[in-house]
Length: 242
Image (cartoon, rainbow, N blue to C red):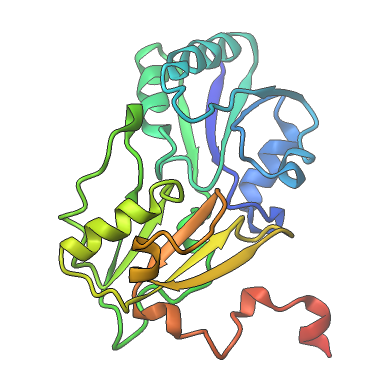
């Protein structure tokens, strides 16, 4: 029985892979990857590539992924299961690990940079944010999240919430957040197509903000911190050396 590595692909830029993840991708005989993993990361794979990505609403496909992982674990000395961001942050890595362990397969998690960290914003900037919460904008089978436990977080990060952004903003306003509170959407963070859209929470609630998925949404005063100073992550090497 082979070992399965649950590997985080990070938010997109292959330079943000861990050294261990990079080595495993180069050496793995087979890699099962998600739909949104950046092609630049996938290009590192030398072995067999298996696309097991799910479209929205295909939660039932997870059982098929479990069975496929088990099949490959029985056929190869080791297998990589590659997931966007971190495998255990809204990535169902825990479910896959439990399934494999129940069938006698050894599992190792290789953490990755979660997309909520890819914005470059100081989520716990001193004096502005004593903590932050990360919440999913959509639950399994399309359910709506209960935002009340997170509404008072100094900084709130919403993943998978682009399609429901107006509803989420309206719900946060109902729960006490201010309509003038700043927020920032970062589309395709760390990719060449990255785009940033800044808006007040009230504007989002009114449906006046156009954003395309996938995007990370940060709500809170920390959004203003780098409004006049670019994040170090945004500078190119040429600009730093100049």
